[in-house]
Length: 399
Ligand SMILES: Cc1cc2nc3c(=O)[nH]c(=O)nc-3n(C[C@H](O)[C@H](O)[C@H](O)COP(=O)(O)OP(=O)(O)OC[C@H]3O[C@@H](n4cnc5c(N)ncnc54)[C@H](O)[C@@H]3O)c2cc1C
Image (cartoon, rainbow, N blue to C red; front, side, top):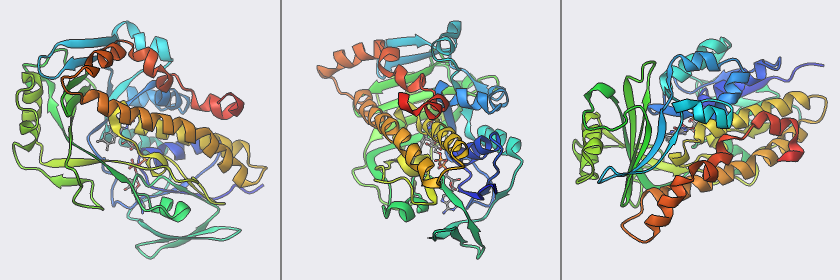
């Protein structure tokens, strides 16, 4: 039986890992990426056990590990006093790995993309921006902005939160602005004199804002930070993630916060403000031959650090179902994939929204309850990290 031809639109984290997941199962795919070169979107990414167990199965984890840092602990602090509200060991005593069966890493996005693309070694068609899809009973015709046209059996939309493929699949136009925005940067660890526990992943929480940071790099030599604030009320550009920031914009949002926070933000070269967007999941994630993965299907707020991790869960599920169901109609695999992934990703999307509220509480009565919940973090959010996507695809009845 002829292997179906598969085109992946987008060579981000989802597209690249999907290509690996197919190849590991004896299938090949072509990747089409709009950018002329693979450049990282954003600065860093945290890879949790639910993704790392899949990277291990794809024999990618060792290469990822050597360019990653493992946080010592997860710590939540009061953003102004610096008081530790809760802490849970991660690398300390290998606690996280023992609990969830795989490690937790902070990694520079460029390093991750480099590992994924180098180890793939297959065809990545750079400078190919998809402009149109026409589906017939027997194939899909893709038209790119550079004039190239190709016919394939299957198109996988891994084209991110502003997905064109999603528009084709569901008619839905786009991502929704969350009315929150972020400043981000990477700063050398050695210059942060006020920072307590520099090797930990830490949330500093306060009214209407929070700062998250974790170490990245082989020797944890840099700190990636992500400072989130409420507002602006509306986002000025429908088609842009970022707007320019003036010197001092970021630090002004954190006046009177702990010196560790102001020092870190002040040390970053913050000339951009990122709008944080979510994708309302389309009713259907597929047509007969076109299917969505990752942010294109379920872009989420980053406060559980799960967008890329949930995307890696998607790709393993879809690859497994496609290859296992190759004797059956394609639509069966797509229907099973959507059924397996919709509820879980919606739950993570909701948890990420709720976390935004919890991290931004003012000085009110809800603080005590929030702080109590944080002391039970593994009990509350362990379901995200312990999930085994391959297992769920192999025995869908258990989901
Ligand atoms: C500020 C921030 C911090 C984050 N931190 C974390 C974290 O710590 N942990 C985590 O798990 N997730 C995190 N995420 C989320 C994570 O980055 C995304 O969920 C993940 O990258 C989704 O992967 P993707 O492949 O679906 O999309 P993307 O990585 O966005 O890739 C989409 C690709 O498609 C290409 N493309 C788009 N349109 C076209 C077209 N028409 N034709 C061809 N190519 C196209 C793009 O150029 C891009 O390369 C964060 C997100 C943000 C915004």
